[in-house]
Length: 412
Image 1 (cartoon, rainbow, N blue to C red):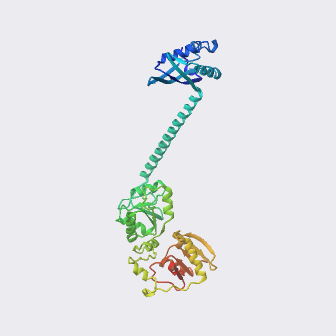
Image 2 (cartoon, rainbow, N blue to C red):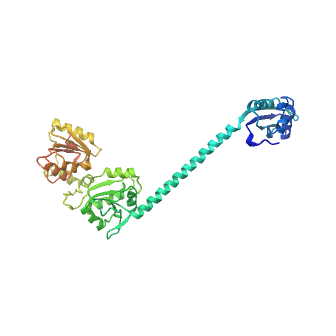
């Protein structure tokens, strides 16, 4: 009789070595014959099999070089003590057929523990599979819904049918990007006041919008983005410049980088001064200064009558402190506002500097990581600010007498 697998508790596992070629039947016969009467009637192997308390003896053999080796397994439903006694009895066998043999009981395995381990391992695999499928399905549903909403939201705006978000005609501020996919990516993150130019030729629809709205140009961080930005700065009325991280594209960057890039936007005039881009004309009553393409001409304009031999100004102890602050903010695109006692009022991003100066009072000195422009000097003059300290002097046509100007090159 074969033991029911459902009632199996333990598995005896043994190894056998024989000094000759033997068969499976020889091993089984030796086990039954040499254990008979050894353990008494209660653990007689034949009786145990008849009562289905042990199962079939399984033998796997391999013969090589005139010798045989193999494994023996025997399932039982006996208790633990009875099973180990039976396993030990296997080791009393010293001959199999005509050959001298050696049997070693390697282990008595608790089948339920082994099954439990298998169940746990399999359950882990299945759970991971379910979780992965759930993620994919969930992501797929979210993406499908999001894409459907994006397609519904995107519009063709104006006579040039520019791809745009639904709020392009309602918002006081707009964001200009390159193409349709850029618009879709920004719509994904809830930015709906966006419009695409579709290439380096800026449509008249976009140009007209920039005359009436606060405009941010948001372009790729590659050469193509730079070319589009140059075109925009020369033909449209751009207020701020934002760029994707270097080599990245607006259409593929995640929400965190989109928001970070827009947060770090800088005034268009400052961007143009930094990269010697000639920017265009007046709109919205703003003063816009054209940066010179010729670097030498720009350099000469920093000093009266284009004098080439430059003499550093005498720097006071207070001004030396300003240069220390300038070093601290270098590379951070930050501005530090000081009162007449040189006490810090606040530190702000450079992109907010002009707006902050217009509405603030009691500012005596501005130290910032940027280029000193004509517009900044005019605001300083109107707000009675005495000192501007920056990295470099831009293309300044008229320097107010009431405002002292220092740049990095003036450092002692």
